[in-house]
Each structure stands twice: as C-alpha cells, then as structure tokens.
Length: 268
Image 1 (cartoon, rainbow, N blue to C red):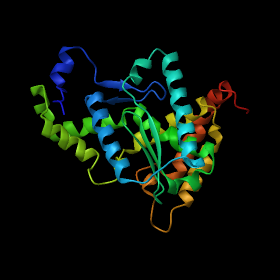
Image 2: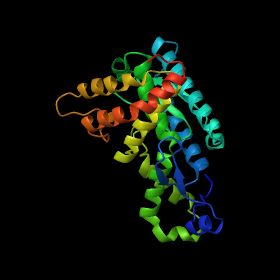
Image 3: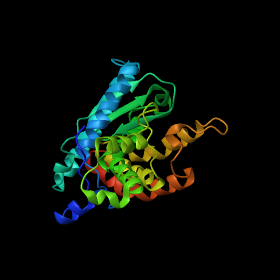
C-alpha cells in the first residue's frame, strides 16, 4: 500500500480545503484522508468478505439488490452531474451483492461496495423497502463518512505529527483497521449519530430521485424497530437515531423528497 499523504501543512500550502460539503444535505465535514487509498483498502476487504461468505446469485432477491442499487447509483450520478459535481464520483466502482446470513444488516463501503444480508430482506419486503436501505447505505459512501471517521481517527491518534507530511504504511493500516476492524463484520463501521441522520436524509432524497416512493421509508423503519427482540437491537440500528426522532426527521425531509419523486415520474 502506498504511503498516504495527508499532511495538514501540505493541504494548507496547496490551498486545498479539507472541509467537504454534502451537495444534498449541506452538511460539512473534515475529510483529510486520501479517497483513492481508502477505496483500494475497502475493495480488498470487500473481496475478502465475499470470498468467505455465501454470495446469493440469480434469485429474485439477489436481482432486486442489483436492480435497485443500479437505479439509485444512476440517480445519484444524474444529480451530481446536474450540479457540476460528477467528478466527485470518479473512482467509484459499484458492486451490489446479497450474502446468505440471518442478520438484519446491510452496508456500503467506500468506493461503492454494497452488501445486503438475506436476513434483512423480509423486513424490506419489496423494492421500496430495499430502496430505503440502499439509499441510506449508499449515502454513507457518497457523503464520505468513511473518510470522515478515518480522518477523526488519524487526528486523534497522530495529531500534530501529521504535519510531517506522510503516514507510514503501518500507520495507515493501523488507522484503517481501527475504523474497519479486521475479522469483524467488515461493513459495520460505527458511524456517529450525525452521520446516520445525514444518511437518512440523503438516502430519502436518493430513493425519490430513483423513482421509489419516499413515503414508504417511515413504514420500513417502523418494521425494522419492531424486529428487535427483547433488549437485542439489530446491528443495523445499533448506532442509529432514536426511532421517534428518526420518523420526525424523515417527515420533515419528506416535502423535498416528494418533489424529487414527482420529477422522477412518481404519483403523489
């Protein structure tokens, strides 16, 4: 792996801002890591995960994951192109796979590597339900949440030493493994509440842009919450917002989403 050049000094000297603004939500975040390096490491972990899992192919659910994923990916590209930011999607190499696993979970790694587990499919129920999850997970990648968390880990661990101009291979590997623990479920990055809420908002808009009814999102999250057994919370919900707050936020974001849905040919 190449040495990651993420010096705050170099960033300042070249006049390159490390503050990235999400074009859909308007939220800004510090992202000083190298997206190409992150995507390369993520792709390696994705391939490893698939090699150890039972990947489902050719079934209705497997095809649904690929079809819904492609529509949301295409909708995102059209939107980014419409605002002159399609270059932000350079380097994404999208994959959408279904893994045989009873867990209620799905994830998207940096660079567009998506995995759904079969356990979440009954909760999704249909294309709209898959679109809610797909939009949410794809939003984590598009918003650079992996970069944001890695940047936070870099600054917390190395702080001012980043002014030296480089991080060694071992330092970079250590940061990546801290954020995406090797041996754990590779997609289960512990995002913060702000990032989860942003993925909800952005995902709602993306599914609407792709022609899926955003009004179905609240019912999905209610089904997901109901899937909790006793005190056990599905990993997919472990760091997510309070259910009541989530529904309130989705309803607040709904008018904008319905505009996108109508523009995509949806019926109100």
